Length: 116
Length: 175
Image 1: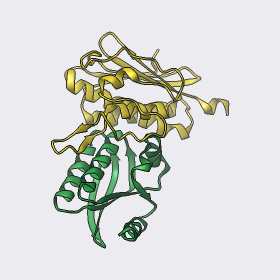
Image 2: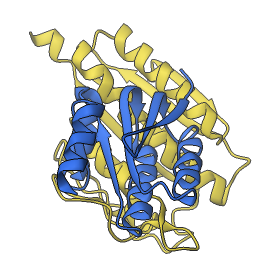
Image 3: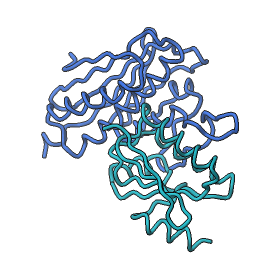
């Protein structure tokens, strides 16, 4: 399945919905969207990966790049993911320590609001 | 002898095709269903790495994927034709330890080091944009992922490139 991207603002946080496969072919589109959002001064991001079917290291690179961009503006990039097959690659690479990973968009937003 | 062989031009779009073929052949070989995701991800990582290397050094050459089933193990070998010493690659070390092997040779070419288990990898060796922001993690992260997924990984030089061999035991056969 190809990659489908959408985004909407919820409680002042930009939620990016990702559906499909994030790999070397599709990851550039996600990267462009994240860059576009940051350029539009959206520095609080939540990437909802509940409908992601595949993620490889290229996709991880895009997420790390997005995190660095928002952090440059004291922002945040949190993830929503409960799928074991996707979480596994975060564990293998140690990136579970780098990203905030939550079970739902509401939980991610609540956690971010609580930190403010 | 390879059960199935696939060659494809070094285009990112074809990496998905290679993943799908590898998963289908793995399923047909009787490999445990729980390992299929690992095969899919590891093959995708190896092919992505090969595509990047070919696009840099030999975009006209195809990448080869051989999928073998010897009854006990399912093995996938991804072979590229990118010159091993193009970027000062060190001699390649095999990684026979099964899941915890080193990947120094190709990692050296890719400009980083393969990470060990649990260590954050978003460090040196990354590809950065003009503003210094990471655009892509080094290909060695892909190799680290492969070593974390496959039961056994061997990375070795070929005549004109590098081969990444990954294998999984057929656990279902002994269950």
